[in-house]
Image 1: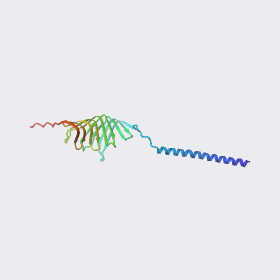
Image 2 (image 1 turned 90 degrees about the horizontal axis):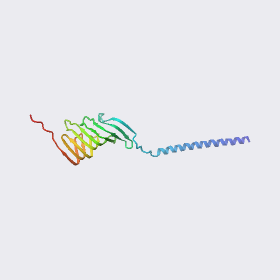
Image 3 (image 1 turned 180 degrees about the vertical axis):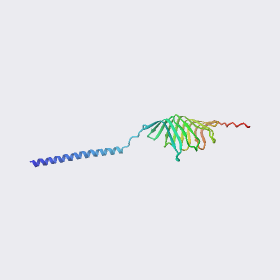
Image 4 (image 1 turned 45 degrees about the horizontal axis):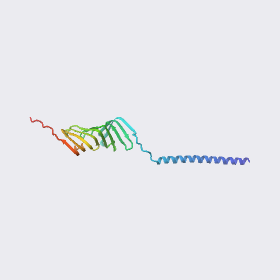
Length: 201
């Protein structure tokens, strides 16, 4: 009788251990499957800005290590959805000594494509001071696309331009600051004035 009880007890303990092992194995398998499912499911894209910088000043360097231009502003916000930046009160200065200097301001801007495109919005003003090779240049518009790597400005909105003593108005513009080539595409009007000649002595 004693041997029979020992046998039953041994079988019971064996079944209990087997049950515990199966339970732990099932729990582990469930955790692994749940984790793998989470890894496979697409994560929802983050739509809110992930960081911002107040009163920033950013300098873009050229491949030769020289400063190309700098952008400053009151507030810079990064958008992770498209890796773009929103800027409040942007101020842009070209720093390339081989190109005519240009300064731009606006109410707001959006920077995209690895800083190769800068969209300027609302009360956009661009100024290039007079140089030995070119007259002073001033542009005013409500929108401007700046391609800083190419030193090009474009707009599909009305623009007001002062070039030396002359004034031009039009809708749609392409301006290459390096070559000083200016194109206006529609509704063009203007007043051309030449500088007064110095009086003969």
